[in-house]
Length: 600
Image: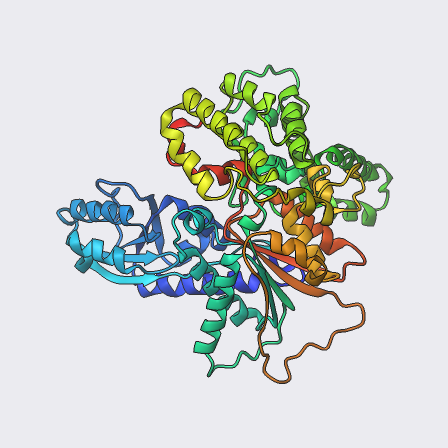
């Protein structure tokens, strides 16, 4: 049982259990011993739903990663492919089956598409002559995966690219389906607000799906009061900025994947007294990051500058608890101390880990390079010299800094200036192509198409108006004891979260003019509830809003929403859902046309 999923306002364990139940049912369809062949991308998301122990209970004896050629030998009756519906993967499966048949005529093959079956993929298997080899072809609908007590993600990495570059709305269909699943478990969401074209599409699909199921009334008392659908392209600026919360920085520097981070091992080596450091570990240290760990839940959303103080305070509390053993005189007191020992030791090791992580991050955040980069970002966000070539960016290109860093900065300048003057844009493009290679012309083209790097058209720059009206820049943001969401970027309040905050109070009517300046329509829909299911709100009871980011969300935005949930007078609790957890680097990478070949 993943207890941390049920701590929050909404018990997300219900969703996890529903997903586990379906998985068990599928595994039981394939009677006898089994080996699973995994599409590598799926192993992380599946790990959040079911550990190996669950698979083992259902006779899964071996697990392999999908690769061409022969499958490793396994003395099992069933081979099950867990796979995303991608054509290139079908060719690998066909290759596996051809090399298999000659050796083991008696094995049964099954294929489980995640999250949907695909006619095109089945057609490809048919063309390859292997479709008939499968006993079962099924789909496992894994849309929204619970990552934490208030966080769901579809981990659909190409959603933004598909929507804005390829005009492919598959991810929006999956989103609408995922939201229908959520409503089946947690009740119909009475109010839907949205901003952006993709948000409009998702809402339309949901309403259509609801009409199609008109005969079946959902009799569950609604858990959510409101759903807010936000397009990522309504706020292109936030993911480009460097996140300054503890969790955000871990993600920016090391990358958090499916709730885990891999860190350089040197900092975590346990040195025994009198020993040299001859046997340093070489394997990266893998840490799980979620609110099940008390200390992490406490510090994850703090601005990094407030983390040191929180860790030293915790250290004092822990050492005081250990000192208690000297005061334990009676058998009863000793017994009580011993019973608390496992918890205290876990707290001590958690503190040691996070102190090491904080040291690793501090080495970077105190460097001159980090400071210079941050200074330029903050100048762009406050509108300083955004209309001319930036000398820092020029220097970074001349020193051949990582291309993604350059693309983030130039895109940020473009977004804060509502496009760049044609001669500034041409200069940047020329410099980038001459320094990093002409193959990147495709990437620059993609960034332009997505609205990140574009020439200025005749229209005026609306960003300063948006910044002032929504108070996106707050001077002297309080990082230690924050009183506003701008602490997550040390001064910049994420536009997406300001929109969420204003919607709760005083409402979007108060910012009608600004909403018109942002891309896409804004709308409100109501879903009828069956009689008797209207909530009777208790005095002082908070409302619950599900905020769904279409195209990705950053950890800093999540921290800002958690901050709003915790504010005494907000009267609102937020649950966050997204197509993908992103940071500026992974987001830009998803828009690049040959990312793996050139990223240092």
